[in-house]
Amino acid sequence: MTGREYPDRPWVGIGIVVFDGDRVLLARRGKPPRVGSWSLPGGAQHLGERAEAAARRELLEETGIEAGPLELAAVVDAITTDERGVRYHYTIVDFCGRRSGGEDRPGDDVAATAWALPEELSQYDLTPDVLRVIAEARQRL
Image 1 (cartoon, rainbow, N blue to C red):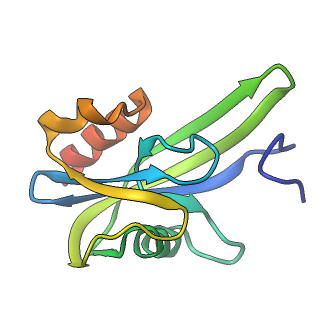
Image 2 (image 1 turned 90 degrees about the vertical axis):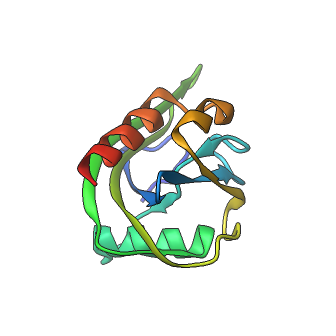
């Protein structure tokens, strides 16, 4: 099996969009790729782990938050290239749901967490894909 950097195949990533009222939970990345940038909580799916279980695990590990019932929100290919070729390629399966418990706190590979209202999202320099996934998740719920 190859590493995540300069892989020979895409890695499966799991993301989760969690709402508390109109606010959406964001996580500031503490490790590569995109260290320091704001995104959705998530990470790599473990071998033998179901996708929804991975979403719940990543949410709890990274933010301390728990979610109620989940729905599929979107699937995104996150591809980063450089002069050597494809540096990272994640196929990210994003789930969405509403907060059911927990107190937000950064954990695992997250440097910070934030709850953002729709009109505040521009302050977080989110990628177009993240903004699209949040919008689609909001429509589904």
